[in-house]
Amino acid sequence: MEIIEGGVTAAKGFQAASAAAGIKYQGRADMALVYSEKPCKTAGTFTTNVVKAAPVKWDKAVVESGIKSHAVIVNSGIANACTGEEGMKYCRETAEEAAKLFGIDAEGVLVGSTGVIGMQLPMERVKAGISVLASSKKGGTVSGTDAARAIMTTDTRKKEAAVRLEIGGKTVTIGGMAKGSGMIHPNMCTMLAFITTDAKISKKALQAALSADVEDTYNMISVDGDTSTNDTVLLLANGEAGNKKIRVNTPEYFLFKEALHCVNEKLAKMMAGDGEGATALFEVKVKGAATKKQAKTLAKSVVCSNLTKAAIAGHDANWGRILCAMGYSGAEFDPEKVDLYFESAAGKLKIIENGTATDYSEEKATEILSQPEVTAIADIKQGQEEATAWGCDLTHGYIDINADYRS
Image (cartoon, one colour):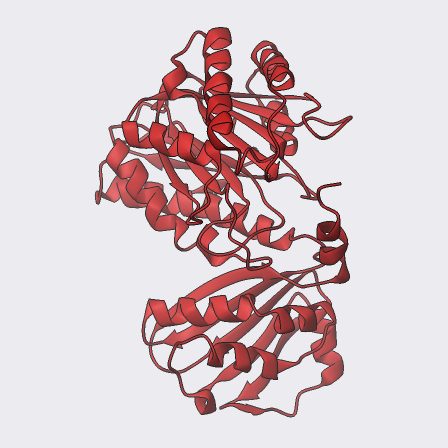
């Protein structure tokens, strides 16, 4: 497997475009298109929030119907959430406008929205934006990157990833783009991720690979503990690679799944590290667990701890906050057996051994915690399982952004 440049247009047969429709933002692109000339099998995972945005309901119905899709239309600025029947009507109008301009079936057009909850979409602007997308769509890295920038809200940077691998003697590519900075929490978040592949794969295998991998990637990130109304991951496969069809639980399936994991993990980490107001990506690894569930529960609890996140922001090796978060996680472990390390580009330092502080250097700990990517490693010495969660530090910037987000 090779990590390559690009995102949603890296795979064969995919095009993208962006448009400045003025939906909420002025002077920047706020609509994006992902398009395949050949119809795609689709898979998706969606928010667990009981309050689901109209695009989530629309896309879930499309994915579950088995209808193939040519296009995804995404807007930023307005979430089309808590908008009632009118919001669903606007999803249909978006799909129908795209269908008319692209000459495709409206029932298979996927839609995505992100931004302020409760506002209605200005459909005349949306339709004008779709027209621009239709006339400017093209392949290549630049168009994919433009689309990735267009779906940003409070994100500070675009998020793309792509890999290439050999399956059955054919070159298969998987690429994707994502957005997410706030309202990010395990069980999906105000995150949108759109993954494309030219692999020939059964719909069952496509959905199985995505559903399984989300548990170890997007569901292991947290910025602020809020699970959004809009989070969506869509995976589109057009079969252009020409490989023999991949089916569930075959060697080819596991190769595909490994490559998909690489793309999803990269995008998930980008979102966690770009949390609103964040200055550092905070990674938590739990090792030596008796079960995978135990490891995940402990890692998530630490990465979600506001006190721990604030300590990371202050470059303070306040390891008691980490043990405390592990203790209230609900997972059973022996705190008197825990070893804890901090690690970054500045080095690795054992902070506690068997639940008690070592004679570590506070100055070295501060140096390690001052890097843009910081890892806490907890070894609980109960078994061979491990898990990793990702988050970010908690700074005053998070409040600055969210205190007046609607304005």
